[in-house]
Image (cartoon, rainbow, N blue to C red):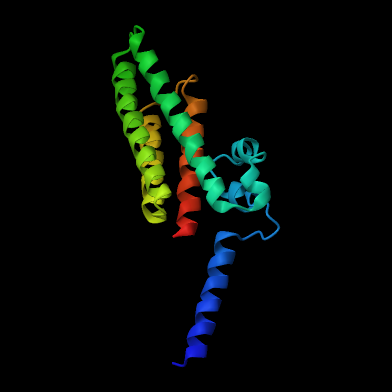
Amino acid sequence: MTKSLYSSLFFLSFVVALFGILPNVKGNILDDICPGSFFPPLCFQMLRNDPSVSKGDIHGLLSTVLHIAQDNTTSTYKLVKSILKQPIKDPNMKAQMTNCLRNYNDAVDYLNRSNDFYKSADYKNTSLYSSLAVHESLSCNHGFDEVPSQLKPLSEAVQEFSNLSARIADNLK
């Protein structure tokens, strides 16, 4: 192949990659990201005022989403831990909450690793470890017939923002 053909192919792949990462060139990247999320209203509500959104800064948005996921996962872990300190009469509930504590401990670890990978621009592993955090939260929820009301909002937030960070990082690979 000639040098100009290589240059043309490189430019074409660059343009395709650019539009794959930033599909909405007007800068409102939430319109492309939130509708496909687990809980679109939560996505829009939590991220609409983030400065990276108006700038169309996908890397900045990923950083924000990762931090929200980490904060919610840590809060969920602390909530489950505090629930376990209270008397629980139902042995099945206590066993499931104990499993959830392990799930959220692992999810905190996975999101910390995901953030470390993000900082080193390793988006493949950022996505992988964020996805693992989603799995841990879902595993906790699957042990209940109905997720306890005090756990449900935090659990949904963990799933939403861990999933979003995985999806965004996946677009940056």
